[in-house]
Image (cartoon, rainbow, N blue to C red; front, side, top):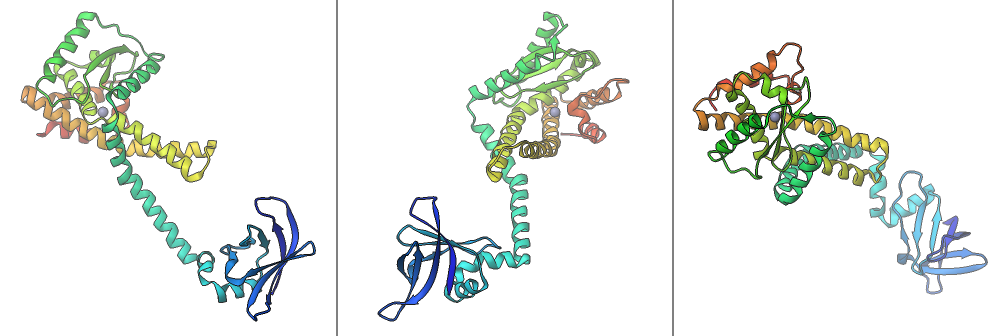
Length: 337
Ligand SMILES: [Zn+2]
């Protein structure tokens, strides 16, 4: 068998035309011979390593003296490799057997999907719990700084704000211990009746939400819902998860081009939507239980949801409108915790 190709000197990218063939040495055993530029280099049969054949890609021969020889794949070489080193053909076999490829693909997909559904939420929640409190506070402050470019200062009087703050402080003494100290911030965004929890224990309440509630108990029910998010560290967990997805996609694909960024974005979006529903249910459950403990009645939660739903001409708050199952949530809020 005579192979033609190119040889590379050790640690050099300079190539020169060369030939490689098998011949018998003086003691009668076979050896490989590399012929280039009028020189001959001999190698014992077993000391030459062949790269695994993949499609039409050239075969790389690693020689014991550090040289490399690259040749095109031929049927003669295939036959020889098959007879000598079956294991090197494993990859090639896979490539030629699409059922095996397909099964591997499906297996990868199953691993990816189960990792996404089970491992990622678990890792996200564990990481969020392990993050130092200082970091969570910093992230929360950063988010609030950004939001302050959109929101205006609250129009509520200091007395009104402090009345709500001291009510909540009183409730907190009777509720499960929060992972962070709770700080309530008031802002205004005309037309937006909303409240939300930030990582690190800050909660933002918008003026229109306060105005929309029929009584303090209804507002408290919404605040309990937000406390539920803080208690379960939902925002932090989502932030950690979205960071993991972005890094994982970059690592898996080895690049961070715009397309890949978008893929990561879609992943984050899907995860956020799928998990936000579970998070909302957890926060609702926390609110119901808290209301029962504080007032022995949680109907105010259902009333608050109905109030938000029935406001004519007003957009539903984002955390409510993203979930079409508001009716179900109202029903859940009406039954016992
Ligand atoms: Zn919520």
